[in-house]
Image (cartoon, rainbow over the protein chains, first blue to last red):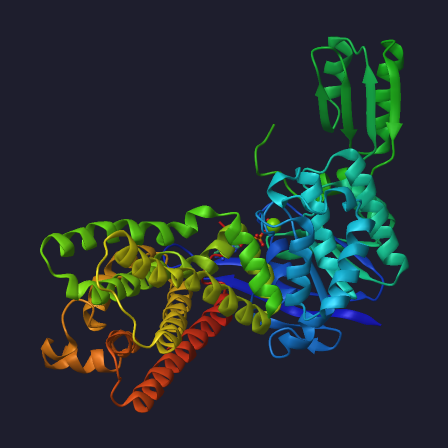
Length: 312
Length: 251
Ligand SMILES: Nc1ncnc2c1ncn2[C@@H]1O[C@H](COP(=O)(O)OP(=O)(O)O)[C@@H](O)[C@H]1O
Ligand SMILES: [Mg+2]
């Protein structure tokens, strides 16, 4: 059963000065219970706008969205009971309060009774490995710890739908692995997750489905394997010790090729023919560490989303 | 509800600059009382103490207590709080009230400094009533702070209005001149302003028997209640207006 149903949802911002911005341009999709949906797309694609509309923080300008059958505009109260929200970044907690005091305050806002709030706070502090620092002020925490408090806060009310907007920005690799385990556990427990991230590996690891968003539209949506099969992103060829002459010959093939001064080459070539030709050149030039990797989400993303931030 | 008060107390304890009012007003009082004493106007000491307390409470509300919502915006907690708007409104009300009531001890400080440091003839005939009226006035200024904090979300420039929100209200509250000497329309506005009723009641409660006490207390309660209703209504409207996306919450 779908817990999220979105129909032709759109949002136009009308600034006092300047032109209108279409942040979300009529998107339609649904999310089943227990799914982990990854929202991928460049900055300004409309991911945050979508998250804010789904969590009732922002009104859409057209279309509808329902969470658990409740309309986000007209039944916001019911919707809010079903969702947990994690916004990325360091902000969103009271720096002058301790981790425990923050959680108790949010528990009270959620309407949890005193005893339940205390119990769940202890439980969450334990679960997120914050027990030892529970009574330190949050403003003294490292970024990774702040993010754990954010997660703990969002899960305090045990929401069946968790919406996270770039929760892992700036997490170290251990924290990242812990986060993936958490999402995995949540999924096992039947929780539905909407996760915005710029980390393709993370998305590939935890998401049951991916939505590629750009200019406020969903360009592609499906399981990572499905999308890879459908879109035909190129394999990646890597090699070390590539001489300038060989590199030049490969660069003439269709696709993108990057070579460093030290002779490491990364090539994403279009078509099997070009790929074989490049491999032949590399073998002949006695390059080392020649490796061919199947396309992953990174390649898929780079194929689907046109680069406009800065062209390298 | 206690949770919200406790959380605010925990935040306040860690921001000592918010206690400035408690220190600054008694410091000024040294100047006032010295002046009164050297000019042999000791009889005005009680009124001076009450006026200083009311001005302190009002400016503390306008400059400090009204920051609650804006602080939440700066910390990024406002967005998340909007997921539980009605309890957040309650939390704001309790937090603002607590911050505003930090000015309450100033009244006692003023009396003590006047009497014990300068030996001025300060006397409070009805201490219980004085405390009650001071508490009601504090609730009124807290409600004003709530109203202001809502405005500060809508209009960023409201912050620069803060200065303009002191002197005119001292005038309307009868703190500078007696209300009866104000020109017509101003006099009517002042009559509908809780501060002028509170100030007069405080002065009378200190002096001796208070005429028409029941009626005047009722009027004060109603005006404070109205002020609170306006404050809560305004913040509720602002919080729901925020959903239109026309105010930027995250900077
Ligand atoms: N409150 C707002 N007022 C005006 N424009 C906005 C507002 N919020 C977002 N936008 C614009 O909407 C577009 C989508 O933004 P956003 O949803 O934040 O993208 P993403 O999260 O994918 O980076 C951007 O062009 C952004 O500038
Ligand atoms: Mg974003």
